[in-house]
Image 1 (cartoon, rainbow, N blue to C red):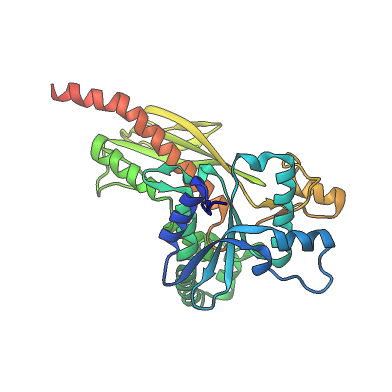
Image 2: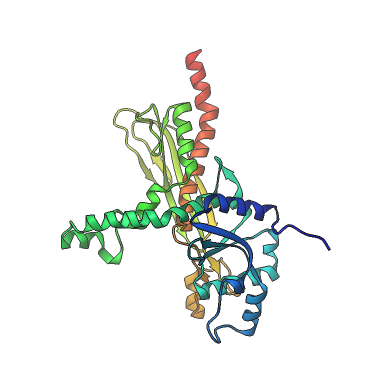
Length: 336
């Protein structure tokens, strides 16, 4: 007999990140908890197979409210073996049980653990979760005060079709403030090193070179994908900026480079075994009258927002790589 570690290398990294972001005093992070210690079925809710699985299976990590001791959500690290057919079935079974309990579940892969300007995607996601309650309350209070000043017609225009316009959407306003930290770091380097002004860092100046990025295409499906277009240009005279048919028009300005970056992440989890992500969830529902997919994320994380911000970050990194090859050399020649 011998003692073995509770976590493998990747799981240890997940735990370190979770402890750093969700540490005391508000949260606790526990590892290797039985599902039955967290979830309890209603009478006759589960089949014998599901009941057995609930007793035998465990969560990799469970985040708990430190004060009430109430479980808040679980995290699972999906290594390479999670592509095996038998493991896929167990994962779907775990997803479905969490869905029945409405217990949020975050599935983490090695891609979540890579550092980008000293920040991992998992760290970004957990930070958004931790800041969401207070920020949502603040934003909601401010919006309530603003809405109270509107007349009936003004409010109607902002809520037409039952959809909140961005200026009064708490989720939209939260997302504006909580962008991927690497974006501002790259934007600051672009300005300090090359004099490039972006939407995220201007240094209080207009700058000789400008960079613009925006989400040109966005597909919020079971794999959420965003395509970010970018352009680097020197404004001149009555320069204007327009994106049409996959290209930027900068008017009288001089275009230096442009391109696109695509980034995607799984959004939610599968809760049935006979569904393939290549089939749209609504098509599956029309065929079977069951929804195959569950948006399992805890509040504040919202994968579509994560995807859009990270696509913006990757676009700025491409601009930085181009500038390092071209603008630095031209600046050296100007000073020689």
